[in-house]
Amino acid sequence: MNGSPITWLFSLMLLFLASEAGLFEPKVHVLIYNDLQNGADLTIHCKSKNDDLGVHLLTYRNDYEFKFRPSILLDTWFYCSMQWNGTMHWFDIYTSKRDTCTFCLWNVRPEGPCLVEYKKVTCYSWNTNA
Picture 1: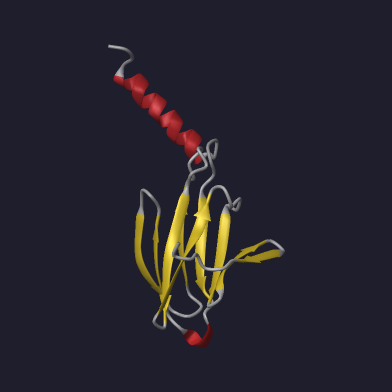
Picture 2 (picture 1 turned 90 degrees about the horizontal axis):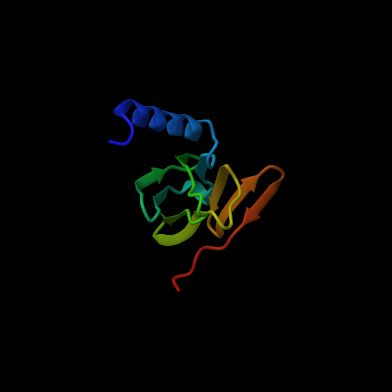
């Protein structure tokens, strides 16, 4: 037998501590804020290839937040469907190739979501059903 259970457990503990200390990719916090007009409720459903975060109802000016650790392969992708007043849109709320934020604040507006970063706001159009 190669290695004792204690050695294996110690190695696993070191890996966990290194991960939590941020020696690997840092955790990303995504916050989605309902900035729709006329006090409309926003229903969101976010997913990745591995996780379904469920359906969440955001009343006007409320938010939903989730956290994850991106893949070191730069292939992390979360997308969300968003519905209000009988309309439905979807958007790639986080992609490793586009996003560099570790705290990604998204204001959802009728014309599209806007990423709010320090001294910078970048607005996007909704994804199309191509």
